[in-house]
Image (cartoon, rainbow, N blue to C red; front, top):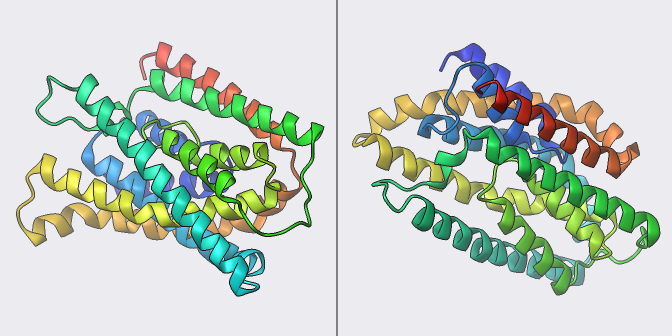
Length: 288
């Protein structure tokens, strides 16, 4: 894993993170085009660490928005905290249950059954990305027909949080099923204003990321039989560098991507996801 490749992947992650187009799918495709194995433990850990880097840039960018949206008074903060906890718990139940079921049923003859073994299969990423596109288009149509109150309460209801958390759980096993695209669209379908749904979606991502890092570190140790701290540090160092570069790339991208996102039309992301899914099918046909 050369430094140049890490920088390229960090830039891809930074450019794609804010948009609901599955940054994971874009990083995995970039890895395959550079002859890397996205299913390898180092690569899946790098993917999570790239997400971590851009999550820090997202925190820097969204912090003031979160303060205005959820921290104006104690009542709003309590409602936000309850919604965040409920959505995260449901994500764990749905996502964890799906991952466990897939690993048990699909890899039952394998000594080490990990869902990450699917991450190098464009034949699975393409339909997941297409599903994201369809969901975004449905949400855009719903918003056009019955637009939510853009100036209403900051409160995310328990019902809305439950739906968002459950759908986020569906995203966990499948690369290409954009977490942000799915959760923001679900919020819109449950009558949450798009800007508020964006705020809540990225807050959920910040909560989810540490658990994802812990899982990938555990997988790396188990699969590669790392027994000493020195071995772990030497293996993890490139991923930490990737996280730093992704943070920088994310901050730079946010400077101009955020404006385009706010002024853009939601359905365009759905169309892009469908076109990208078609592109992945073509790449798969040519042996990637």
